Image 1: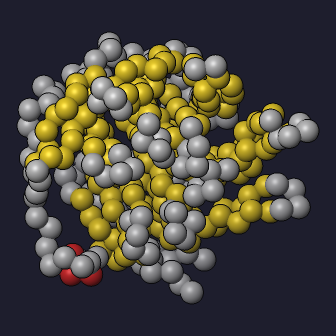
Image 2: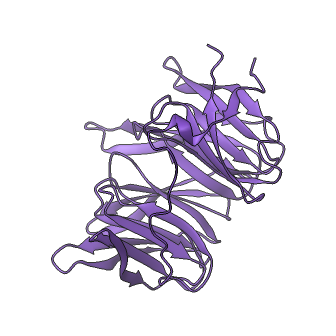
Image 3: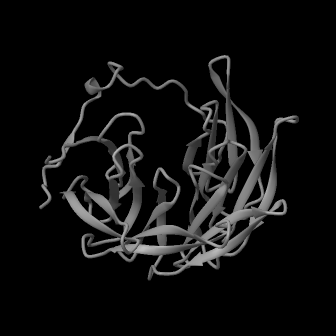
Length: 302
């Protein structure tokens, strides 16, 4: 049984700093709505993407951020950016139905387009790198998920995942890199697992091992798989936040999901974004159409 009171609003006093202070305002990069931002793994660079069809790379020098590069090439709104674990590649995706892989050329301190991926037939909503390797996953308005890897200095789609009945909004990897979760406009979560075969495990296939249905009443706009507790949190268009625990069944390679917490009316409008704190246990942030960002403390029942 889950508890409706499993999430409590937290305060900044629970953190090391006494208050949150705006350190920089970056105003010179984009001309339209900024849709997504992502830190590089080293923390020295910030990527931003915008409805103006560009991506800006910001570098920190002498305590201030400067736009060191503006990446152009997408024909329409850029929806998402994400860095690979090494920081050598940046992925972006757009309403123009494409995902791009950008490579950092260290000698010249420039970013070059390494590949343009045009396998989706509709707006690409999300791109995500594996936390363990250069494996890229994308999701789209065409209801599919594509998985890419580098082959002979180019990036190729080696598998298309079917299963969602509508737009796939978001993706999040398990800390192992062997599983990821997807969320859709069809009010469904799906957990995908990698299976390897062949003499040296060189052949691989991703399969759905769990479908989580019946818990959400509207589209699930975002999902995040906690790297500390392995709990999955969702942001939903029904104004609610939910937390699931996942148990892997070794006997038949399936997974079982348990709803641990449902916070109804977490916001007064659609919840668009959800993220676990990567360092502090059971702390969760949410953002919604009500213009609020809320910090939550998850209080497990055991």
